[in-house]
Image (cartoon, rainbow, N blue to C red; front, side, top):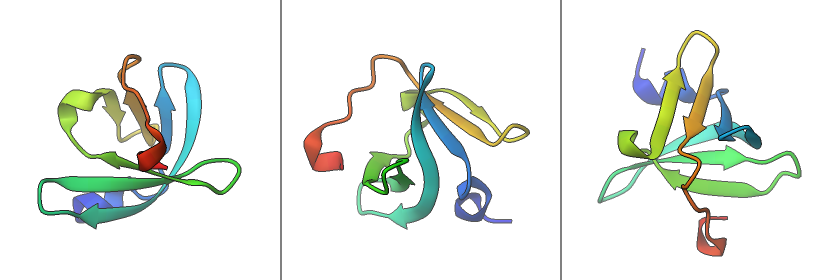
Amino acid sequence: MLLEQTLIGFNVYRDKEYLGLVNDFLEAPANQVIEIKDPEGKEILIPFVHSFFDRIDYKSKELVLKSDYCIYDDET
């Protein structure tokens, strides 16, 4: 199974704050990007860079961003 297929449906958190669900996995020139759909249906784009995450848990289907990772308006 490809990585992008594996991550779709994962819950995404920043520390303990729920950000949403991985909706898509995109290829960009610099790096891969995950598209998250938040509880209100808004899309958040985050580069899929391992150093941005505290934990990637395939068993629990959770991605946990580092607590100091900032999400800017241009990422939503």
